[in-house]
Image 1: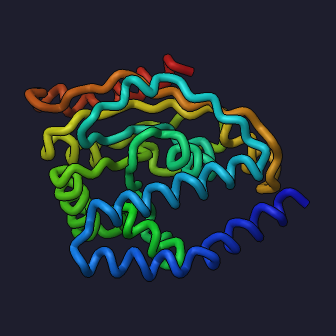
Image 2: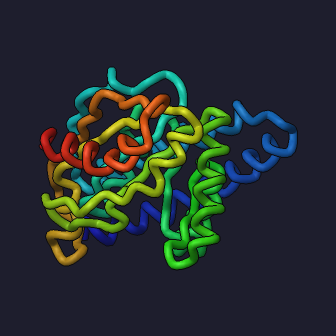
Length: 235
């Protein structure tokens, strides 16, 4: 029953806030970008927290003081689908996500993702992927923050896959810091229960930021492994 109620709320909320999308479009057309961004961020954070509460998820947050004031790239492990509302609801900073291209085909969700500053990545098309990463760099240079999942897919457990380095180049080119983030327990909400939602405790740990300016080519190559080790050690 919890799962059914959760999905009813998930889509019901998106339908209920359709008038807000109209307002967001008007703000965009009027050039009131800061007001638009604040409205989008508040709505998404509120929705994400309600989704977690409805699922019976208790979120413990550690290290909020490590979030820098300016733009940054959050680098997170990826245990399950509930990573996304956890990050959107409790990272105390507006941010978009690097998402699979398939997300751009989901009605209503894609609209919010676009306004949030999400980047849709086609990993099977190198030219398209490079274009997406360039767009991500431009957003960072404009002051927007982005979250990446360098494993590229959900681990569905406590283990972590290898970290791919591609998206780290955005931070280096935009000269913004990387912020390692450890998520623990989200897979217990759905993936451990054959995709039925069950209550769980989730811990979100934000680690000290890593500057990218001035790093050597060799240091940049090792970033993935270095950050993976830091996230693993925080578990």
